[in-house]
Amino acid sequence: MFRLGRNRALASAFAAPKTSPASRLPSFAQQQRRALSIHEYISADLLKQYGIDVPKGAVAKSAAEAEAVAKSIGSDDMVIKAQVLAGGRGKGTFDNGLKGGVRVIYSPTEAKMFAEQMIGHQLITKQTGAQGRLCNSVYICERKFARREFYLAVLMDRGSQGPVIVSSSQGGMDIEGVAKENPDAINTTYIDINVGVTDEMARDIAVKLGFSEQCVDDAVKTIQNLYKIFLEKDATQIEINPLSETSDHKVMCMDAKFNFDDNAEFRQKEAFEWRDTTQEDADEVRAAESGLNFIKLDGDIGCLVNGAGLAMATMDIIKLNGGQPANFLDVGGGATPAAIKEAFELITSDPKVTAIFVNIFGGIVRCDAIAHGLINTVKSLDLKIPIIARLQGTNMEEAHRLINDSGMKIFSIDDLQNAAEKAVQLSKVVKMARDIDVGVEFTLGI
Image 1: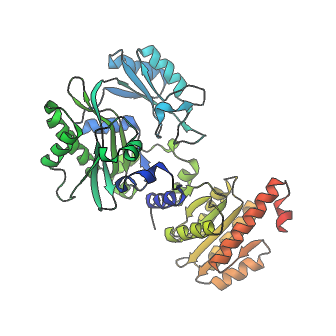
Image 2: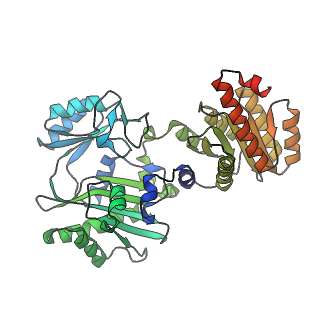
Image 3: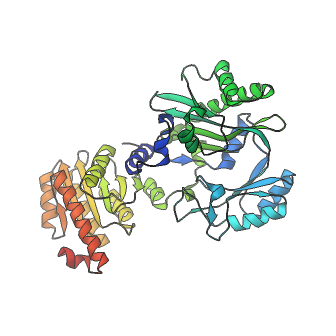
């Protein structure tokens, strides 16, 4: 069974509009989305463990803690950053009207004041959507002044089937904008996984970035240590923006974004303990706890499928017939009645859903067992929206009979194209009924 990271990558690729910023990046940057990202303050601690310089700072989870942290830093020039796993924090707006999730502060009193306005509030950025994302803590650090700012990332590249280091002299900027406007400013260094980042390779990157002569040796060590983290922690991305040469000629990571391979969770227990589920969709967290792979999408036809490949085919055929999938939901090879019930509860918690397409291949689990679970679930949840069921495999004839004899309006259809057409048709009927405030049961003849 595919893990959530791979399924998320597939579903995201399916759902992303062709004009998305990611589509404008070079191929190395069009990476799979993974489940685990970590907060900036944790990233800073990890960098320090590997001998990489970062500004002095600490996390605070209350206004009082923020004031204490600011006092401990011993500077009157600091930055307070909302710890929210989303890009564009600096240009974001909190639900209480405060503008900017990254603010310059000059005293412990200001740290306390801004922490009060950030912690416990939703920060809305270009990546969070209108609902925003909850800020549970703030990271306060000294403000360092950079003579030069660079961009550096270590990524897994599917094209070369190995790691790459992506670097640019234009750091501190939106790298997607740089890739679009000035692609020549981005350098890509391919790494032999069996050799690693040699001194010569790291020096070449540092010189091309533009580090001054007295900083090149430190930059070489920093680049090699970043790759060491990448390798030892099973990261899929380490992004430093900006990687800076400070006014006192130190090489320092001013900000960091880490992503880890969720398929390596079994050997990266510590990293996965850093996961903050408050930053994730609550339904997706609930699904993961139940062993389901679930990703919300923007459509209105719920999908319940076993197997990632079949799930992608199901979403494709819905799209081809003019519909929009509301989710990616893979119940796995088991597809037990309990899993089906949990899956239905997740799907129907989305008020946009107007029909559910169940597409199950009964191999490990028989189709008649699936049919029993489906019928019992529809009864227990008292579902009013139409269910289209395509059950193929072991005991499919018996499953078809059970559904037809149940007296419930579950549409059992063997042909995939016909089932998809029916799902799209019934979804439109339900939407029309909702628009004119007519009962779904009346409209469908249920």
